[in-house]
Image (tube, rainbow, N blue to C red; front, side, top):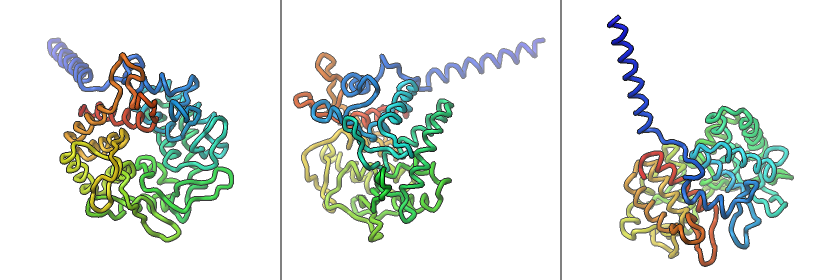
Length: 357
């Protein structure tokens, strides 16, 4: 009898320990009431009642992007918000998706763009597959497979996925923008077309970089060559670096450029001279900081991520007594973009989940 009492006591202590371990180490989902102020800004100022997120508050308030749909879905997965995710799936199917599974990159009023954007389609597909795994709802799988099949049928040119395809004529682009390659999404398509997967993946992992770590922006199928821009657009460069790091490619030079530039200037600018690394614009961008944070997190540069996070947050409207609280916005002109706000949300949430912020 004493033996069984002892065993029972050990089991109870183990369960109690597990409870408290879970309590203090897990990251609980955030309720809408306690959601980050940026999320509340998006919901209150950019989102329509049916879930569509406008591209701006002024001249672009009736324009909607597939880019926004994908980024919002990605964030909602991190925030564990299935209800809002389902609403966005409805937006996708009602406004953006064509009968054959391609996704118009833009909707103006009721008019759909005539082309898709590869990065947006694979981001949305990826989010749907992840949602099925997270919430065990097969309806996500149905939509994800439809998108994937359309990409395999129409988006491959010379065994390489290309930037866009005309959603009506199916005419294909002749270039691949390397920042479009989201590793977790492209990896999911390997089983559908292994040769296209391998060739497309290698274009980023094997791309040449210069002494500062900058990568070519595109690969041209007609000339079978990489194309460098004369300027280093940091959104493109950091996207490529982040994605290349996820595929375990070498990004050490680019990370060092970000680290040293931040150490010297205390900030990052939007564009730099490709060869000299000197800033050629004077503006900072929320999306640049968000992508730099994601790259820093991916490469285990936690201190750099924290420093960059402070700069990003300095661009936020943080006075709860003033209009547009929580938004990354120029209050005077009402200039804002969901791309900045959603990337900031994703970077912030990932830093939170990793225990960095």
